[in-house]
Structure formats: C-alpha cells, structure tokens
Image (cartoon, rainbow, N blue to C red; front, top):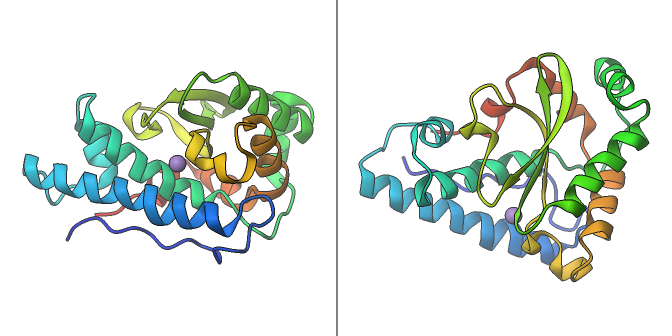
Amino acid sequence: MPFQLPPLPFDHAALAPHMSAETLDFHHGKHHQAYVDKTNHLVAEAGLEGQSVVQIIAKSPPGPLRSNAGQLWNHSFFWQCLTPDFEPPAGRLAALISKACGTSDELLGALSDAATAHFGSGWIWLLLDKGDLRIEALHDGDSPAAHPGMEPLLGLDVWEHAYYLDYRNARPAYAKAVLGKLVNWAFVARNLDGDGLARADQG
Ligand code: MN3
C-alpha cells in the first residue's frame, strides 16, 4: 500500500494563535501531502515497495528519494511533538534537562538559538545521545532516520513554510512560541525509550 498522510493528532485550529489553522492547512495538507506523494512516486519508480519509510531513508543515498522520505518522516514526527494541552517536562526527562542545561528555560533557549542560527531550510533536533541530551541541526530534508544511532526526541521545523503565514520572516518569534507553548513534552519523554523513529514510521 502506498504511504499515507497521517492525520494531525489535534484539530487544525487547536494550536492558534501560536500556529494558525491556515498554516496547518498548508503545512500538513499541502507540504506534507506533497512529500507523501513524491515519495510514493519515487518508491514506485525505484521498485522499493514493501519497505517502511525509515528503511527507505536509511538505505537510500543522498538524493530526491531520501529527501522526500525524510520529509515524510520528519513531519509525521513533528505533528506528534505538538499539543494544545501544554504541560512542562516531568520525570526522567526533567532530570536529563537539569543535567544538560540546568533549567527547561535554558534548554528552550539553546533550541531557539539553534533555530535562529540555522542557515536556510532544515530542522532542529533534540536527540538522546548515549543517555544524554544533545541538540543538532540538519539541513533541508535530512532526517535522524538517515543517521545511524540518532535517537530523536523532539523536532522543530525551521523551513519558511512552517512560519511564514503566521510570523512572516520572524523565525525567532516562531521558535519561541512553538517551544514555549506547543511542545508535547509527554511525547518527547516517551521517546526516551529509543523508539522515536518507529513512532513516525509506516509501511
Ligand atoms: Mn515543513
């Protein structure tokens, strides 16, 4: 079966005003859908049906298939990182944040700085690296699934299509709002089990 666009885990209007229904209509309904469609087209062309998105990303050389499948996976993961019902980090995740950064605010500052500093399109990832937290920026459609050993906890889309309708060119304002108001820390904490890649996989 071809890959499908996963439904958003919340109503399109639920993240406003930090992320508008219009942004989600375009970002999920148009951009993410286009990555699904292009991946399906390229998979059929290459005769790779039957493999999962993560398998395709992991096995493909750099190029259109890996980038489109990467974006299919990245966005499928990203929506799960967001929630209208914000609760601060707790438990083991809160302890890891303390160890790495001191406070949640410091972690958000470091993620926000990485989002602001990243040149061009890409993603900011919070990763679990040998039991500790690490932040890494990846370009364009690159994905943690393409890098053996990367265990994703949280992803932040910093492509212009993620924020232009709501924030115009102000990427720092977008990063601050999403990180401060919309992160689903319960989902981030669940990914401490190392199964983050599987949570946005299909096929
Ligand atoms: Mn995007």
